[in-house]
Length: 204
Image (cartoon, rainbow, N blue to C red):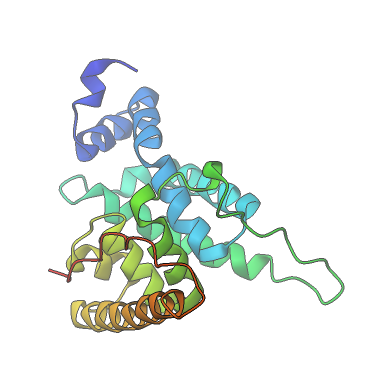
């Protein structure tokens, strides 16, 4: 990939893609491939499905790029496509009663942790286990993707107030679970609690 493309904004790359540049689109795939995978993998919990949804998201993005308004931000547009694609994929693949359950993601496998920061691994594992999807998705977009409340509202098709409420509830639930887990580790006869990971900051 040429250094010039790497210095361009997402929106400029989108404009070049609209003008017919496949190389510009490849740069967008390199930038967003692991991030989209991380987002959909945490929603579907299945590595094979996550890879299929990620690939299909970029196919649909290329097909729809002519309708993208390059005066707006590219990331919320792409994550919105990924979310809708994930919902469609889930509806198509509801398993029949006699079908075996798909293989679950191995979250300890580094190849399945492309979009996660190592120092927050334990927090995200706890979040996946204890939060409903309606709370996990905005939390992931806020802290793993560093999106604003307005961007998250666009991706999830909710009001900004609703997003703030979901983030507040998610942080409360997660804080309770982390505190309870640490308390169990500190009980007599158990090993000392490990050093806590960096906490999630309040939403802007």
